[in-house]
Amino acid sequence: MTKQSLKYNQQKPSIGHPVVLVKDVTMMFNIANEHLSSLKEYFIKLATRQLFYREFCALDKVSLRVEQGDVFGIVGINGSGKSTLLKIIAGVLEPTYGNVEVNGTIAPLIELGAGFDFELTARENIYLNGALLGYNRKYIDEHFDEIVSFAELEGFLELPMKNYSSGMVARIAFAVATVMIPDLLIVDEALSVGDMFFQEKCLDRINTLISDHGTTVLFVSHNIEQVERLCHKAIWLEQGVVQMTGSTLEVCEAYKNSKQ
Amino acid sequence: MSGLLERFFGRFQHDWFILTSLVSKDFKLKYRRSVLGIAWSVLNPLLMMFVMAAVFTFVFRGNATTQPFPVYLILGTTLFNLMNSSTTNGASSIINSAGLIKKIRINKMIFPLQKVVFELVSFALSLIAVVIVLVVYRIMPTFNLLLLPLLLVYMLLFCAGLSLLLSALAVFFTDIIYLWGVIIVAWTYGTPLFYPINALPPVMLTVMQFNPMYHYVTYFRSITMCSVRPRVSELLSCIGQQQLWQPAWQPPGLIENLVCFGIAIITFGIGMAVFRATEKRFVLFV
Image: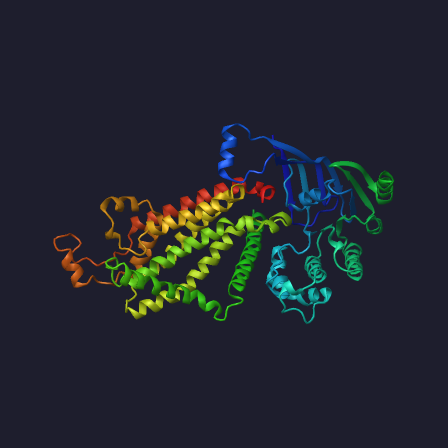
């Protein structure tokens, strides 16, 4: 019996197929009672049969079905499993049990700027980051100006990134990640950096993707107003368990009431 | 079927672009702040050879009997250095890429391979230094030099296998990285890099057969130096022995090629198997 099954199709989802199908996903983390990172310790523990692990359940039988064109908000307090769920959908983590099916290309905006090297210039970083996100060289060449103008980088391209402000870094990362038109956009706290105008600009870009290209969005934010503004469906997680799934209004209302 | 093949090819192309981007990043970072820049890739092996040739000609006299000694030295050390750097950097490659592994979906095998490819390109650059030394000592190239790409394939497989194995183990036990540093030092002295093989007692000759780097270094020297004839003094010293009148270096035969290939493919297979079996758990440990 297989414990888990994972399917990631790069092709566009066919009509009637969900973009994301998460079924009974459970994620267990082993927290070693002590952190063992040396061979000697490991063998001593193994020999004396003290190699016990404490298990921590980050997600407990979570199911989620995201249809094409859905804009799905995920709400919950810190440590409720939101990021774990997104990472499983993005294919970074593998669940302990359960099935995950994703149809279409993913643009993950999980912790913007993963893979930036701060010694390199912005130009070099755009190519490097583009490669890591799965673009080919030709695609980046064609869209280079678009990225630069969105990030408002004109004149700073040949400067090493370590001299940039964190807001500028976030702008580049967002610009690179959203230059492609993805089938699924995963946004995790990405907009908490950058100034207000940039946040507005990002939300505009996400809105354009939704309205013009039918992009499906999974959105995590602590800012409940942002969720209410952007999403029309929502899921509420509490300590790894789904509390409620439904329309944004109902879920956010219930969530806010529970916190008061 | 063709769709499957296309998808496989697409994945490979995607991974290859990431790999080359990362390797070019490594190059940019390595020489960014130096005045001579990439010229160091050529200068470094040359200067190293001068130092070692001086040490072994003037300080530890008598070791430098194999002639021409600087050629013997630079061939051995550049090839050994390829293995040394790629496995040492490869071992910590997964740990150092923790940031990426935790955040994006990526073929994790790229990271150790990135280090091997990077060192292979550096090695290709250091071949310029080798050519300079060969020209200075007037060593004529022979057709045997055409076997060099074959040797590089062996080295690529061998180093990739070791890097995959070490990088996977290092995720669970950081000790591996420190242990490997010690092993490399022992291996450097245990391989005839600065001393001739016949300086060793006969027992060690048998032991040496189990040293993969001995095979690769000998392969590299024999395809490069097989036009070198032994000097009269050397011939006189081995009168009565069977190797009289034979050239100093024999080009590698089929058996030697099979041995080199066998070592490489077995190492690669083991590294690959261990990496594949453990890669899913990396993200939980790094």
